[in-house]
Amino acid sequence: MEQDHAFLEYVVKALVDNPDQVEISRTVDEMGVLLTLTVAPEDMGKIIGKEGNIAKAIRTLLRVVGMKHNARVNLKVNEPVGGKRDGRPEEMKSVDQVVEELG
Image (cartoon, rainbow, N blue to C red; front, side, top):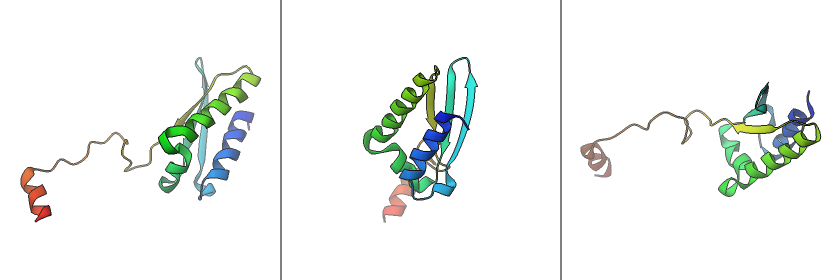
């Protein structure tokens, strides 16, 4: 296991409530190293943090680890299925449906 992968796994598993559901994939291309992180939906807040501060800090530390090994390391956090930004449009309701639900 590469050091950037091992570092990310150590940090993330220490933060989440479900460490057994942490999955990390590592790909290397001309742009550098891409670590893709998937965690349980209920742990997303612990990884992203308020205003994304935890995710920013993890990305900064990964860049430091990468610099030590002459590599550019990037982190992508996968949105859980059903998340707010999973790419699927929300179901649109008509005005009548909304009024009926309120009544």
